[in-house]
Image (cartoon, rainbow, N blue to C red; front, side, top):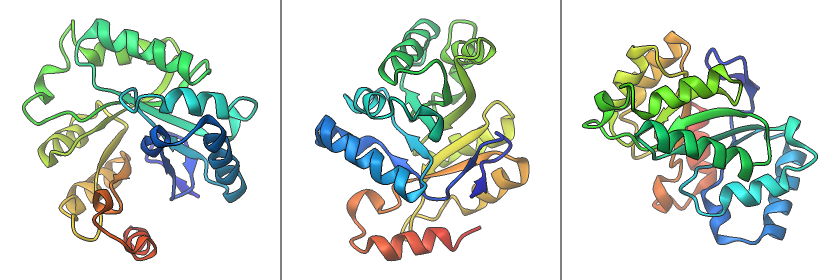
Length: 208
């Protein structure tokens, strides 16, 4: 188990990314969750943009919600859209709260525009104050975005690609660790470019 930044969550270092749920049935999703529970994996990450992933996971997690930390995310950038997406996620996942809600795929050029009165970050803050979400995170494919996020103090977690062939996040991950910001590795197999999954995981797990 590993402390997830300063969130108070203690999670297995290997979690489950929910994007492939789009390609399987509800029955198979139930089997996946069974296997995660058996292996002691307790962190699941999905997204509004992963079509039926939230819904299938919500159905599969019925009766065992407390055994998992759930993270999801939204591409919404304005206040009303994010507010709506949070409610849809809660309904889809059949839960009263979401452990981590992330701003999804924020580009460097967008970063400074998400904090205004009518922008998405305000909706996340309000949802956190209401107990609908526990923590606020951000995901990006742009190094500049996660660098700014770590320095800002506005986000409790960052998610960024990291694998054998993409390790440009080394320094920002170290800085995040120093500041108590949780880090989530995206694309551990480089989007399918790495064939040897065991080697890929060993590389990532060898990093602090």
